[in-house]
Image 1: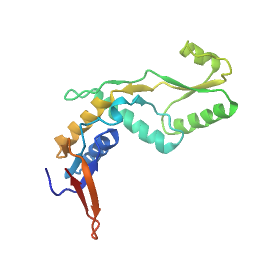
Image 2: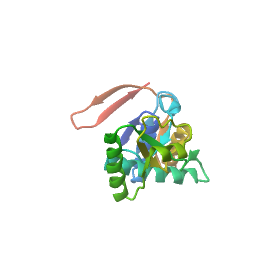
Image 3: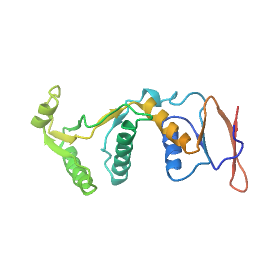
Length: 191
């Protein structure tokens, strides 16, 4: 195991694997990920792993759009493909005018970022998803890009691509302590 590195990422779930991957995409190669067990053995493996552009603010829409583009690229990667079902579509339902107004505002904001949503009435909600009850329903927000991804495959693929450009991943390596030094370096203690 390395004893010195620029960055230590602690945790091998989606946040850790994505951080490791994106650091390497920015040119960092002296990076390490340590995971106490196996990648995705924490909460990531049983995530619903829904993928959507919906986020109610520009920052979240931008992050989610970036993720969707990355997931499409990984899905089509012949070396390490990921199970990503894209474009199934999804509806966020509204039973108050305030919710509908929020969806109209969001759709307008997202459109300005190049991301299309559609505000639909209750009848159209039922047409697109026949199991929806329209009782007390005013309408909803349709995202034709909604889909899902296999979270375990995604983490493995992100780690694989990070390792290809120099990152190292240590499984079964619990972190037992952290110490910050006066020069702002850290010691990461493991078993």
